Length: 176
Image (tube, rainbow, N blue to C red):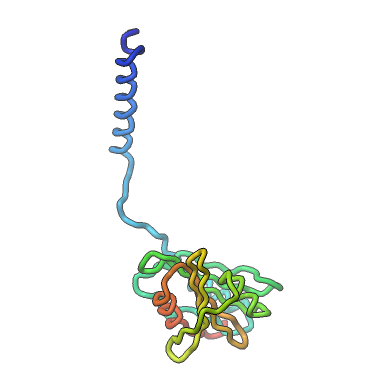
């Protein structure tokens, strides 16, 4: 028995036993090669947000093709204002988030959501102009639209065409 536990032969046997154990584990462990991004329905969150705020809520009329809505929440912003967040994995599997709030001042809300205060230009989406912002260190692109009663922000690592696609699908929902 001592021959199996000492020297090079013992080392080789121990290594073989470990590799056999790993191989057996890999054989019986469930594996999936398919991507799995959890899909979360945001319709109830949007409806609840509409009941809590004094303005008409904006939301996508439908999800962009190939996008997966994977997060949504209502949170308190500065000064007690309500903020709605809708998160997506885009068709290119980048991140995009839509946020809206009536937080005042609107510029501070937009700056906080985008991480930068300096506009990089404008983007025309249909007949609406959105302000473009780009944060180089995080490769974060953002579109900002300030309306009299609400500020809309679309931001993330998604490219400009993807963010523009989401902006084009936004529409006002009825109050409550």
